[in-house]
Length: 527
Image (cartoon, rainbow, N blue to C red; front, side, top):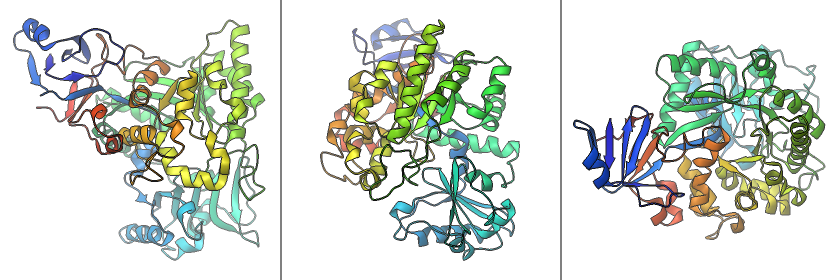
C-alpha cells in the first residue's frame, strides 16, 4: 500500500474539504482525505510519500490516436520539415545506413508548407533507386512513393483509381508518386508485414512516450494486428496503458460473429467503437465540402452518405457496437450527423440502448448543424492541436467558413460531450500542447495574435481538462473508474511541479509531469 500526502489533488466536482492525501492499494484508490485523517489511520509499514505541496491530476486520456502507427513513427524518418529539400536530406541519411532493397518509411510531410507543393517519385528516385521509399503525409491520408516502390506494388499508368482513392498523374497519365485516400493501400499492401515482435516493440515504444507526458489511457483506432499485440503484452504484464480499442469497419463482421460488443474486456483493455471514414482530410484537400475549396471546383472526397451511415449503424447497434465516424469537411459532418439522426430513431423504435456514438475530428460544421451533436447525444471527439497546426491552411482553403471550424467552445457550450486527443502520429500526443491549444488558440510561438485564432472558441482550462479526463472515461464506459479521484477508481495519476491553474495560459505547453503513476505503480519520478 502507498500513502501520498501533502499534495493538491484536483477534484473539480467535489464539494467537501480539499483532498491532500490518498491511499492506494494495488491498482485502486482506497481512501481520500486530509493529511491528518489519512496519516493518523494509516496501517503500520505503509509506504509514505510526501508530495511537497505539488499538484496532482488524474492520468490523462488521449481519445483519438493510432497506437501502432505512432510507435512505428518513432523509428521512421521524420518528414515534417519546412522544405521538400530538407525532407529529402533526411531520407538520404536513412538510405545511407540501410542495405539496398530494404524499405525506407517515413511520416509527416506537408505539401502545404512547401514552396512548390507535392513532391514526386523522381524526387525520391534522386535519393535512391535501390531502396523502395514510401512516406505518409502529416494527415496520414496521402502517401509519396518512389519508382521502385511503385514497381514492387505493380502500379503503373494502367492502374485504375480504386474506390474512394485517387492516384495523382502527370499530363501523360503516369503516376507521379502521390496517392490519395484509399489509393495508399496500393503501396502499403506491398510493404512486408512486421513480425509479431516488431509490432509489440512499436507498442512498447509508444507506451513509454505516452506515459512520460502524462497520458495513462488511450482510445486507439489501429487495426486487428495492434489488438493482437496489445493482448499479448497484457498477458505478459507489460501493458501499462489503459486502451479502449476501436474496431475497424472491415473487422465488424468478425466482431459480430464472435458476439463481442462495445465495452467487452477489462479495465486495462476493452473494445470501443466501430471506426468508419466519411471523408478525407484538409491537408490534401480530400475532406468533403458542401461548397468547393477556395479558388477551385474541388469538393473533396465523400466516402459515406447519411443512408450509408444508417445502414452500417443498424447492423452495429443490433449487435451492441457503437460507431466512431471520421468526418472533417462540412459535407461529411452534415451527412454523418443526419445518418446518426436516423440511427437514433432506429434505436428508439426498436427499444435498443442509445449507444455512445462519436464523430471523430468534427473540424468544420455548417451553421445549421451546430446543435445536432448535443441534440443527438453524439460525442465530439476533437484534437485541439489540429486547430493551431491547420489554421493557415484552413484559412487558405476554407476562407470565411473557418469561423465554424474547430468549434471547441461552441460544442461544449451547446452541451455536447467533448473529448480531446491528438490523432498521433498526425500531431504530438503531448496533452499539454493540446490544453495550450484549446485554451489559447495560439501556436507555440504565440501566433497568430495574443487573442488567438477565433478567440471566441477558446475554452477555460477546466473545460479543456474535462475533455482529457472525465468525459473520455464516461464515453468509454469507465465513469467512476478513470479520469477522477474517487474511492474505488483506478490509481492513475500525474504529479506536476507547477499548478496549471496558477500560471499564464501560454506556459501550459511547457509543462511536463514530475511523476506518473499507472495502475498503482510509479512509472517514473517516484521518490
